Image (cartoon, rainbow, N blue to C red):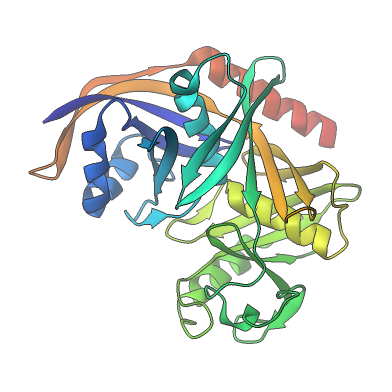
Length: 321
């Protein structure tokens, strides 16, 4: 049985249970126990997923697991939290370093705190417009940008973006979460064009360089926030002319706000910058043989961090009202 500390954290309202597999390499055994991962996500904080901070050669990385126990290739909100946990390993005086996720190396930067005190990190995420994860994009150099997918919806114009994990995003005048849920569920019936499923997002252009997003996350469902979805929506908004590439885009969701910037040269990359907030810290014991766990010490709230982020969200509401 392994006794280990856990952190309940969030990036833009996207909540995670985070464990340190650098200090405790045994934790990587969770990858072989999806039912235990799902139980931990459900019972320890009711989170949107589980994060492992891991060692990758001489560097560090993230393994992210959805609430159904499946492993995701990338998580934009999660990797910012992992960046914070990895910071002491790379050196507290280091502001730029790399983290691996899904076999891809991502450049990370610690930025000035948001709202004066909120720990903030930026990650650069490579963008692909054509992959086997979305068969209609194959063989098309320009990708699939602002087009109808009749099997999914007869009106919406989707853009396909792959950030290590697949995304379909569409601009709308108003976000309808019931419609979004139907789209997310319908994806499961389209293995001929989406063999590995996909995240689905709707984004509303707000004028200027700002959008509002909502996401049905593959393996999770409707979520308050999805970092790669906000990154994909920004990329699509720039490709479709709603926002300006090469400039900061404010991306709002029900969990808060991040800033993204889509670059096309020298390679297609979109950056994602936002908070990495700790909500509470606790201790659990994990039995990998029995596939079970027990809580050793109740989570101690990080009151100051929670208050700082709540003040940030309130400030956003006041500025947008």
